[in-house]
Image (tube, helix red, strand yellow):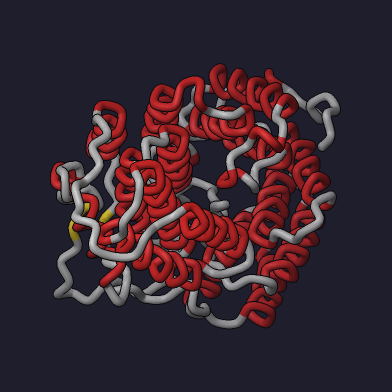
Length: 452
């Protein structure tokens, strides 16, 4: 991990006037009315660019080729993601929701919520007291080797999610979760083993939410994360709960109201306090930088970026929890670049994006989602500085990398870069990049289905 001075850091760039308001707020309705693809992106997020500008015909053509999930049937009633939130926090509410989640053949659709409806979930987590649900042990003995085996399997699934599409990750998470729930209900276990099983359940529900985020089902992702948050509370693991809130915050930073993300991240910090490792605090600070920049708060964005760089350079791998295996300096550099890009300073953002890609090159494993995202965002920064040729070259690299994974995230990254290139007046160059994307990626695969 490099500890060089921050590459090209320009705190003044964040303090300059941010981009127009249509690039700092992006609701689902506004995105859909603009015809933008409804396939999500992460890290962990896909192309997380906000803005409600009308895409050109070429970018729209890529979506029409099968990259926008079909809407639900007209007769389907879709409830808000926080439906039954009070019941979730009753004594047997978590068990009911986990069973419903594992018994459903397909993920239920939910509408994403925002504002007080979203913040109230975080507030419940902060205020609730741990109460393990009473069960009558009638089944298998749950001992340390068995629990450790489940923890190892969850860790393996986390890493598999780096190379698998969202639907595959959801299916695997659901299968593992069904067994975990059965052991929690009828297994014979100690309080310590029960808490660890709840932590496993929380992580599996969080991964399921991340998978729904990948395929663009934002409300369903929120629902999974609300269940994960409840399970993390039952596991008596504030840090695990804080990471769930961080995931929720990341989604609404890019596909909701960034102000909600600021609130959720502050709740995460308050709920876990001094229990967070340096890398966890660094990632939260980096996410806050982007969220603040999106709301036009450039002063706080600059401060959070500085803090994130300081913390990540102090982080020690041995102190990081397993669920933060992916977090490195590359992620702080990427967020620093994104904060500057969102704040209207694309030239200042470029060194940070380049540093993120350099750090990615040093990893032993390939992480295609990150690479496509980093290349696409760097490409957009070049578009906004007038370097169309470089942006197109980066786009072709991103397409080649995207063939390694079937993900709605990577598809949207590429579609948005094409849109930026076309809107910059280079329609022919955008068309060539779109043709490459169609030839290489084909129609939407299993990660971009119509879920009902």
